[in-house]
Length: 365
Image (tube, rainbow, N blue to C red):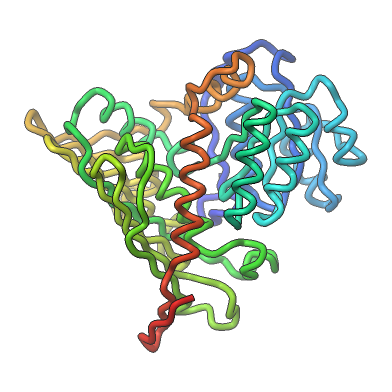
């Protein structure tokens, strides 16, 4: 797990298999983003058997094989897709290419698990919706800032138990370190990464829908800007948005690529959830100047104020639930409707964003 580099941050949990060895075989295609390691870690810990890997870049494949020595390098993508034993393909290719890969995967009768954001255009989203309806297969998305963070998982459990009453508002911050020296060229090109609200903003919108129990929401306002990284004119290092859900809950989130070097991890991600009878604060990756470990949760309600240190204590149930959903045609991990709605709203927020810059000039994109 690389704490200083968000692109290669790959959480590890305890083994919690829901299937026996060889019962659920997976493959990895597309290693452009380091999240593929977190995706595979979660699935393997839930009992999946990683059989194949393919990427055009042989260096990426060699590095992947060092981490997962049991995996076989494929000679082509087709070799994997034509293997009848493979049930699911995990992919973290360049953002703008994730949809096309998913369409091919589903055409071969396999489930697809992609890194966020799954799409860069609304047109891609509609193609995916049609393909899942046609095939009945899963198009799962690695919304890791909720699914692969124990304090975020625990927050959902507390809300389900009624610990803070009905959720009124979700406030999220998703700061990231830009680490420009280690980033690939596509990371800075709008055509390929889709924009900051489409990219890391997708985490924030997904968790808002989940914690509030909303089925839909309206993007009221959104902004994007490039305040620091002027050498990359297509890059956006700041974005925020305000949403109102169909059940009345509200959301404000801010995302950025401005994390200073003094922080001991790649980003001080936090979430505050206000309910009618209490509130929760999640400090996901660090409790600054106090504890370098993440997964801190603070709860205040009518009964108590309490701090929970959750690192290594909750686990990551999503991955096992996803495997069982694929095998049993259920939707316990995440519904397809929810998966796509989060993607849709981040694309709308990006499309409608106002551009601001460090001279405080405002322009419609």
